[in-house]
Length: 248
Image (tube, rainbow, N blue to C red; front, side, top):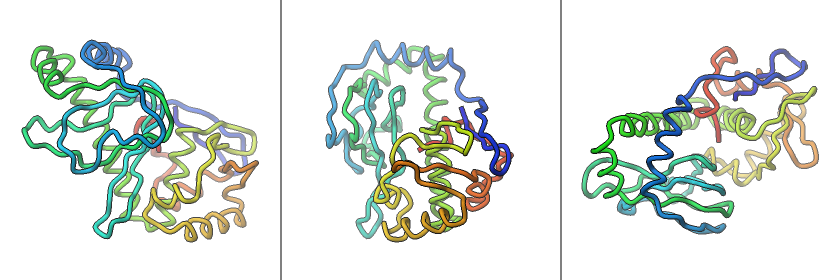
């Protein structure tokens, strides 16, 4: 579901947009459950580091994992937050493949560990499952590409606006005043998501509060003018991505 604020200072509405067909997604999930091993995860656990050899992919049953990448100067950037129902990891189909991102647990839960040898055997024996797995890989690639576009093409303000739009899709609740992001967003985390300083994020958000674009309600961000954020990040409101793509 993608949340869209229809008109300036008008009531928010929730509309749906396409994505992976539910039937195919359930088929892939069922097939992977047959070969995965359960693992409990706790806050602070590292599932893998960027640059580690690829040994497995992970299906998140519960909890939350942040995907990170290190810049050349050693600064960490948060690429995305992965939730229950997501697959994380990489599959290159070749020996010596390394993880291009790191995966750190930020909310305790459990995952299913899918070893690469078992995955390769499953995909080689079931064409339909292999097709759905390729679709998943394409979705993950598109998420990463669009976030990198936000970081590189629209400046820090554009990247921050994009993060708020994505947060609205991931955690937003439509209200008469706008979209209330139900999860509190730490300024430091927002800064890591866009490769900026905490001070820069705070200053930008304060400016948007003065302009009436956002408001802070009991520590949570209320998006009052979604269209304004779309314009700042260069994303026309008429172009609605699936929330499977446009998310934190």
